[in-house]
Image (cartoon, rainbow, N blue to C red):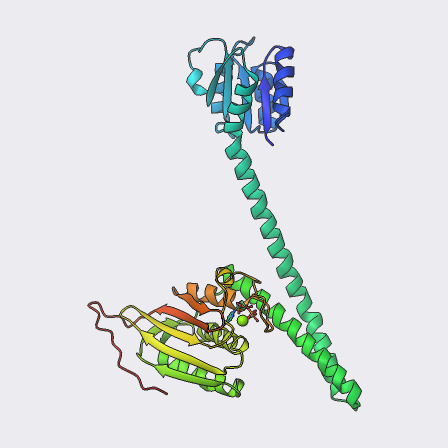
Length: 362
Ligand SMILES: Nc1ncnc2c1ncn2[C@@H]1O[C@H](COP(=O)(O)OP(=O)(O)OP(=O)(O)O)[C@@H](O)[C@H]1O
Ligand SMILES: [Mg+2]
């Protein structure tokens, strides 16, 4: 668990302390005096130094002073062992009176090394997460080219004289390759947004107008759905148009995917004094309270149908945050869901008078 340096001129003490601390998983190195201890600690920085006071050439307190003055060792926690409190005993993190009791030394050592062990384990978890992240992004990146080449080959074959049987299977192959490509693009997009490698190209955008334009595209793309747009209040926000579109495309594509048999999607643009919002409402399967807590996490998908990678909301939420906004959700199983994107408006006038007018229902 922790690397401990034991310092005592008596071998029998070193032996029993070492075995006592080994019982609770610590790894102990030994030194017979202060100088040997300093040399050992400089070589491998210990997590804790446990030293006796009465030693030849250098006392325990002198060793504590020397540790304090040595670069890289000043912060190492220390325990001083002695029958009486010597002058300067306060230099030690803890003082333990000799004779040392089995339980006392285990407890005091545990208290001092626990924060060190916790910090080490947190760091290991962070390193592992980073390695996993890098591996995932590397795979996504490396797969992109072969996928492109495979798709091109399938398209080439499809353009030649193929019979119906061959065409059917080539088309299936092409669809699967496209699906893999979507996943790769989403993984790489998520990585760049979340790691802050995306710079927004912002300009003032009237939100009702933008959503009006997007609604036209959605009506073409999802021709078997009714997309009902209401602009209640017009408002200007500083937006990266493409990224704002990406957020809203994600919300609408979810409303289509999880909207069930009812093919009505209501999109409402509204604003209050300092923020504008777009809500996307469907009447589909809804989301259970358990899933609701996790839907913005990467790769999280609820069990109901629909095809996806569990990345859309993760990316959309990160993009909303980059804009200084957020996405909220209200949902009931069987009744549908409403996702609301809220963005700070840039035409806010102090005193509540926003420079916007009532917009028409389109
Ligand atoms: N409107 C909705 N109604 C019901 N469930 C939804 C809705 N939107 C999202 N969900 C649930 O949240 C999960 C995460 O959504 P998200 O958009 O992140 O991923 P996805 O749609 O599965 O895949 P993709 O990465 O292609 O968007 C979905 O798998 C789905 O279970
Ligand atoms: Mg989605």
